Image 1 (spheres, helix red, strand yellow):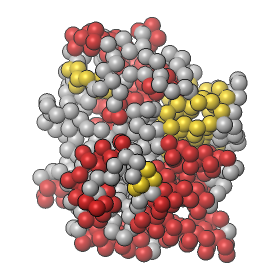
Image 2 (cartoon, helix red, strand yellow; image 1 turned 135 degrees about the vertical axis):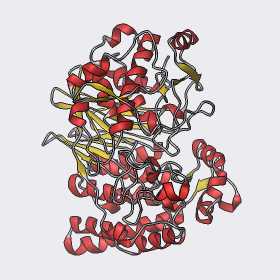
Image 3 (cartoon, rainbow, N blue to C red; image 1 turned 180 degrees about the horizontal axis):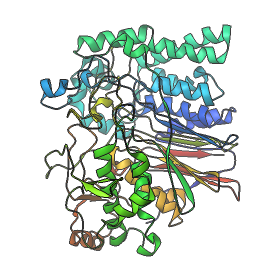
Image 4 (tube, rainbow, N blue to C red; image 1 turned 90 degrees about the vertical axis):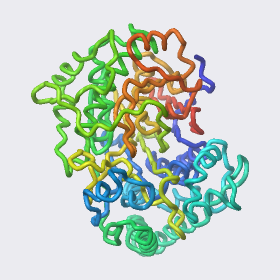
Length: 573
């Protein structure tokens, strides 16, 4: 299948982002002398405005950063924690085990601290410098685009539940149409207030003091006070102390080697390890010989992913609260055992049992929801940004938090992170609800290296499909030799044979979704193997929207790809 765009190449710097205006905002920072982190944060702040259906400045913003000079990888978790006042069994006692839409699922906003921390530790510019484009898009408006109009239309009743959300997303009582300017005045005022506070502090004590002032203005000042007051009035649990005490975590990455490539993924506080765990399983196969998107190839990847998702379900959670046996799960010995469970001739009809990496035996699955049979899984929220600069520093970030499940904070213009939807109400689950605990996050940016040098940052939106789409694009590039744009546009598939990350954690045993561009004989062969095959359209945003940049050190050229399944774009120079 021919790609619809060409791979964009540059020798100085390249940025690929989930929205074309965000790519432009980051590119302007690079052209002004900023580094990859400055540009990544600028694009991320712009995404907070431009993709406000799927991302919020009050949401999550996990990031992975590579510094070429020190050859060091840094990971910012960028996810908030449950309020101190939440009772672990609250949702069992009051909501029948569900975590309902609204402020009761809110965790502390992490993105503001994540963006500021990235600038503070790895950037060169001020918050005001990198926030300028986002403020302009919020204050003056940006042209409404079809995907955003479609999302608001589909979720109109959800937005209408809260007057503050309806004010923004249903101005004049209707859905804004493509080409109309879409304004977020309260959000612009909030961002401008943070810039003003930064300038006052920086004028006296310098750049770092200015960034500290941004953090304190958000988490300890009037913004926090307004948000807490509203959340409390709606029956939520947040307090001023929850905001004031919050800080992001710098987390170790989880890494593996595959075909001479070192892959770094986010830790088990997220779903990140699913990607390297699956690559470990695939090391024992000649993938190229199987043929790209052949029935044998798709079957193998799906069965391997089912095994990884089973371990995700049974083990992954905030390591500050649960003992995740990540060293054992990532071991070659464990991969050899789990690989032996894959049947090349038959699909597992459900999610396979988890494994015990110590005893190399199966573990019965727990906390399993009733299987779903009819309605297919919906698309996940989120966006993505990657940047490589002239010094070959790299930024990989996956900001998120949709706006249709929790209300916009009146007068503030942001959604308070509703990421509590990715926790479990069941006591004992590794991602259960608890005060100060992080939900298990789906957003998970990644970086890859070869021969000790940067090879590629990459990532995608789309919930439980993220690691699946990332795996396919990674293999498209590094096994099948595709150019980045060809790799991100190639037809994709996804299994849903596991409990989903979002409430109500829907489970679709043996369900396999494939894009319609995959030939019918392939799907027929997959059905003969026992997969329940359902077809998407030719291309669908449900299959993710991968962005990637490949560093060709031999030629000194950066190659960027951006997925047209959503309004992603790439720019280079």
